[in-house]
Length: 250
Image 1 (spheres, one colour):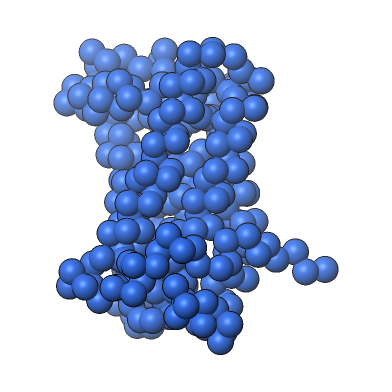
Image 2 (tube, one colour):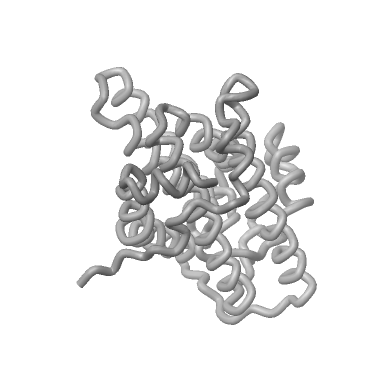
């Protein structure tokens, strides 16, 4: 049975001027537009829901396990945690490889935004509070305390599951793997390094006490399922005449 999802498969009119002028600004206009769409379309809403959940202070369930509390705080892991903000420009910039990848890059960002919005519904209707920060001893963090305090001043302990840190970064690595995997030994080496960096990020969401194990596992499941049944079918059609025509008509 074909389970492919078509939502987001047609380029939005939002990209019209950016697509038509994609070679302007030294080829940076389209990636800047895509990065901006994530910052506004994903980041702003995340913060609003995060503050709303903190104000409402109601959780649907508590996913805490003994393993969650047993995982130690590793102060320097705050650095891999912050690397999420490098994945957003990564997808947009590396997607400018050729005309087909540019179409894929636009469609990838569309679907990523839609998926993020679906995750927001979970944040709103099935919230879980991350009651793990109590184990963080700021006085023992050393230089890392500044990073933790800056994070906690903006991000309240909500928007737990599925971890958008995992969802957005994993899908970005998968699409970069699609664009550059198997091209050369050097690129494969760089992709290997990228996967290692992503692994550190995945571990960091738990060792910084930002997320439960439940958040990480559900995020990986949602990401892999979405990649197989939503992202790949749409990306593979990006070179079809119908899709090319849709982009030309923007």
